[in-house]
Image (cartoon, rainbow, N blue to C red; front, side, top):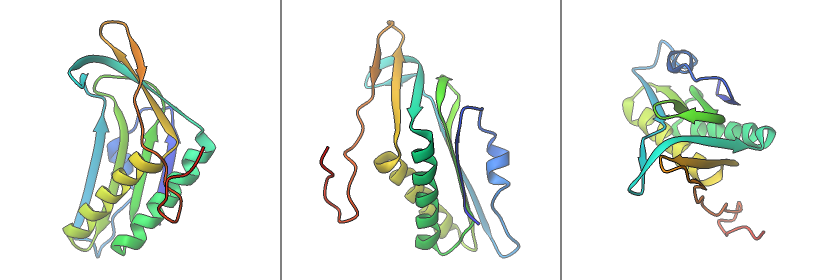
Length: 150
């Protein structure tokens, strides 16, 4: 069964990985995205993720379910953190288990790429020089593959 959550608490990678796995699985994969100390040549001191949380959870559930369809396993778990994060904090964790490693890698990659395209979570970086800036996102696509109009 897929699992998706958006929350303010620190993400426990072992807990996310523990949500997947079955006796028939030969692969268990965990991806963690962490706040890095730089972006585009600038020193980063931290970030803030804001979200319309109810919508974000719904979209994250859709993404996890789609990943399960793509790779043929329902053992997909994803958690995205919102709020203030420091350098080194985990912002997202994705776990996928499947009979073979190729499926697990494909599922994990699918989830993170779809998060970047579709998840209603916005990122504001705090640079070491005191400046704060929203990070540009991508234009959401409609189900037909066309850019949605504002």
